Length: 64
Picture 1 (cartoon, rainbow, N blue to C red):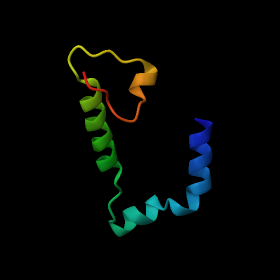
Picture 2 (tube, rainbow, N blue to C red):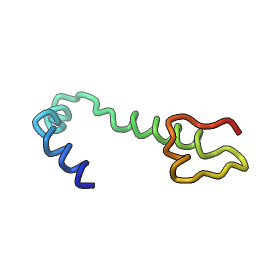
Picture 3 (spheres, rainbow, N blue to C red):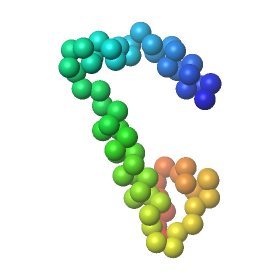
Picture 4 (cartoon, one colour):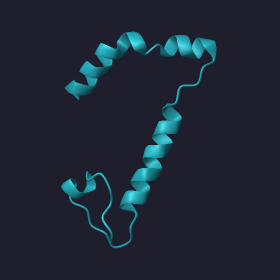
């Protein structure tokens, strides 16, 4: 959590959400969240699979 807070605090000058919203520019959080949700479902919704924390955090799913 501290690492995330530090990252956002350091990048604050580049995160001009208020300006983007005022200009009508899109903020891509919905797209990013949707993609993450689909990737997680694809990864964890394999019938009969079991996942350890280490296996769940691997960069690509292993074959069933």
